[in-house]
Image (tube, rainbow, N blue to C red; front, top):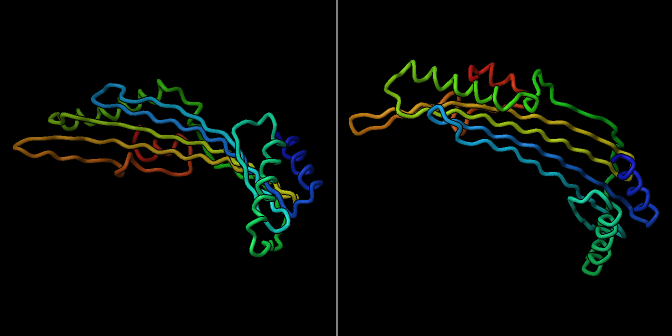
Length: 211
């Protein structure tokens, strides 16, 4: 992939752009929910794509795609849009100087959540539900959920910057519902809105006592 990105940047510079950059995003998400000791939802999704931005003669053009086979074609589309934008240009964009940065960052995780089997995740949620029911037999509904996200970002520009990021987000939560005498009470732990979340791995849920 790096070779394709470098090739595209070189091609754009040959065509006279003042500046160009490409951003790649690859996002994987997983959501698992249980309710009354049964699997309620199990979802895994992935989105991947990239965008190319160019500045030519003081006008900007941008194009994006999920097709990585011909990155040059998308770059040329961004170039075409920049040329078309010049028609309505009032004043050319002047870019500020910036440093060239080459770096990478990865969220520190003790346990990559995407290496833990779905069965193990469900077992932990069922165990949490069972503990709630044993503590309060009057409960008529218990819920458990886990959510995970991994996002890989890659930025490269015509000035020589090359930055990569690997970001993990993990969270989980449980809910107990009881009713009687015409009233219903709900309690959630450790927070509302499906629990608490952090830039961490699977271990984060364990530190909260969920799972």
